[in-house]
Image 1 (cartoon, rainbow, N blue to C red):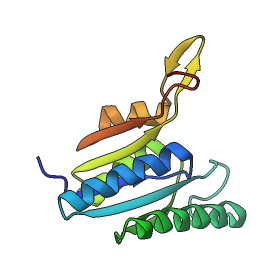
Image 2: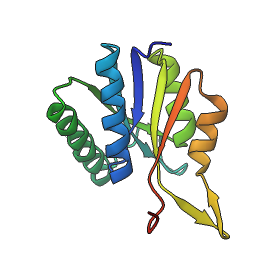
Image 3: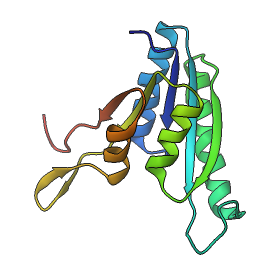
Length: 144
């Protein structure tokens, strides 16, 4: 399988940065394209296209950080700021629109009620993605 069109949802966390670096190495290997998205969650009380200035500015700064990481790896990427009611469906729709072969997502290690837990967003993407999905889970804190 070749991954020529890779979508990376990016929130700016350390694990997202590591997942992006993984995606960039895949992009280099297959001479592919990397699409990085930041999804702004819009409350239902607001119009979907509402200009939420502080949140938009934060998203732009986070995408600039992603571009800096790609530049460090000498790889050109496309970035996009999206607004949606729910993050999971926005990621899946973007994968469909961009004809992605792969979605690469960072996964923080979290426990809920003493057991490992994944977010609703990741569960939605795993269930509904039209393409392969790589999860890059951070190491368990304190392990090793």
